[in-house]
Length: 214
Image (tube, rainbow, N blue to C red; front, top):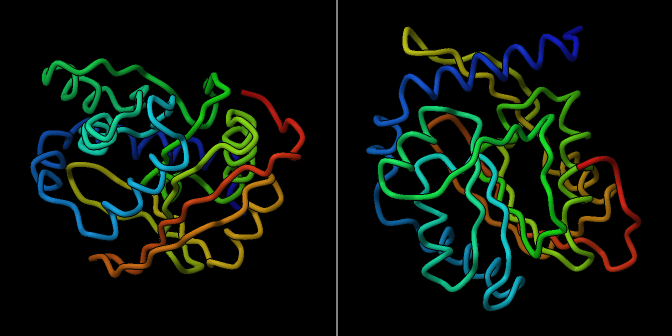
């Protein structure tokens, strides 16, 4: 079995891979989003309300943060990759270093965005991450999160870096979110180059007790 320290090491190797390829990744993702992606962002904004405070983890190049700010919410941009932090700062954006696994998420937030990051966290660590996300949300707060569908785990990449990819069965992820008071309101599915992705909007139930650290 893979230990928590192994999972953490694989996550750090993944972050190093993004450090090395941040400009290339930014260029590859600098395009108009799909209609489903826009709808997901719009539903987050509707959930948090005008001027709502949103924490974005794994902000990457910052394209979604740009879109959310243009829609009228306040975004705290964060990432663990120094490469992405430098890229955003070179664009004149304010972005902070934050470790989703061990860092202080602050809050409580009206909304949290965690797109294309859960797949890089070891399966045994994700429960704690979701607990900390839930604890960092206001009761009634909105979470926008994506995960790669399936039940496998792999290391992918090449000379530029190694990336940990952990897939989740939709039923398992739904149950995990529910255990921490996060109820799915809407889901979107699309086929990517490496498999099927599921994006969901979930809300923290009003009566959910405080959970975990953060």
